[in-house]
Length: 172
Image (tube, rainbow, N blue to C red; front, top):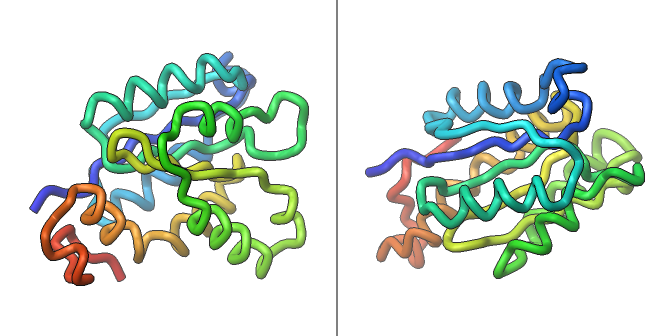
């Protein structure tokens, strides 16, 4: 049984220039490790579609990662382009994930309706956009974590996945 392998991409002009410490990426990493997942790569890029897409394509096309979490760039600000970058590289959208995350976040804050985050699959790698707030990242990952092992099993095409029997390390 292979652990879930993740990568975390922080999208932030200020963090990419060293003007602000990245707190969201490490928040995701810390939680992922607590679930027994392997953090296989991290990066910080500016709010630029091409820069975001280059990393997403590179990571997804290597086959080294099961899930890529992005953090940042999902709001209404003019430079928030993470959803557009993600939509430009995914092959199959996963709207249920994005909708569920927004619905869960709406229980916490009305500002969740301002999220433009998307998710989808490229080359059997699930890409999920998270907000740029460390707190929101933790809330989203805590909510989503129980279903991700099954999602990974399905993408890995494990025979037991279709019957709902998890073979990846289950999370509680």
